[in-house]
Image 1 (cartoon, rainbow, N blue to C red):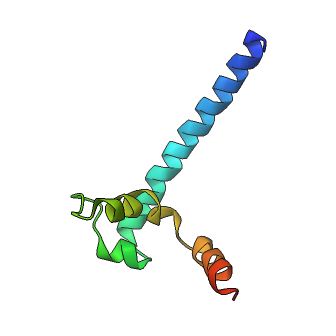
Image 2: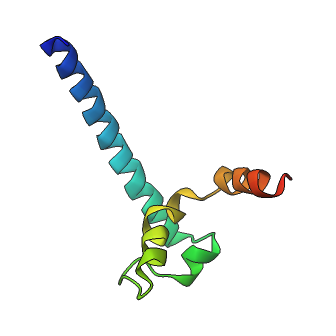
Length: 80
């Protein structure tokens, strides 16, 4: 692969990672301000819970399980 192509790919990946980081911060902030799921309501973001795997799910996955994602999950699991 040419150096210019590699540089372009790295730039695109860098931009994607930057926006992914920013949207993750926004999702985490909304998750704290307005918890929707049962997991968000049960576990606090800080300090880490004794059940570390559940806490990781709370911090990394639960902020993304909001709004339309909840409906899509219900459709996939229950067919409704």
